Image (cartoon, rainbow, N blue to C red; front, side, top):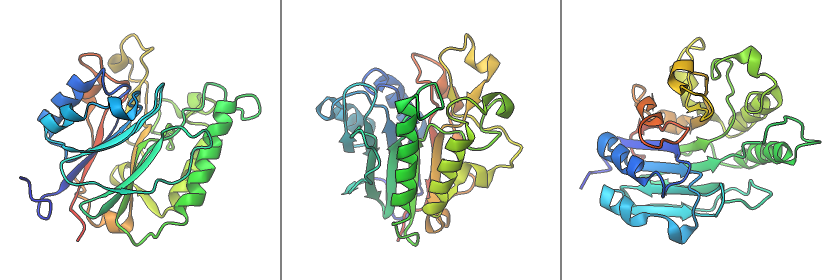
Length: 273
């Protein structure tokens, strides 16, 4: 068995867009990439429908699942024991979007933030109003957490905050996921929790970074009209544990057999003492 006191912990976040449908993709990814922890969003199944046996067979025997029918649900699968923690109360609609756990001494928050619909107006679009409320709750709740703890926040946050987190900053300023009200609210939440956005800390501002490409594109790779919606944040103590060469957007997994529209994103951290 892998010694979690010596080996860096490889943590993955992935909006899988139906875990049961794409379990072959997940199993192949686990075999190829050997993650220690996978945080999934949009699992689209009830808790008792989660394919836990498939994860055990793949080498991730410990699971924490918050399932729900429809388009929600989050889950954590781990090579090492999971200590469940109380999730932050972020979703006014009581969707299965938030979970928390401690693994190898690192606190992990797995979040699936509402997409917000198509119209960026909270007065006419309740989905967008819900998204802004969720972000406001994140800022409130994250401010209450002790920043001296090694903590990461991962997930599909459905906001591309930086101008080079989208294929065209100018063209997407009025498109949900990149509007100023969303990017400013996400930044407020990040700062409230004293988090560093790992991707931007390790890359220049000029570098384009995407983790999501629409199914609507005839050839998503050729057009490359992506957005960085999937995030990994870390507090300073977690940044001290980070392998700074490990951040990776696993682009090939956006393609292939029945892919999710999101690519998995990973980092490696040393276990906390």
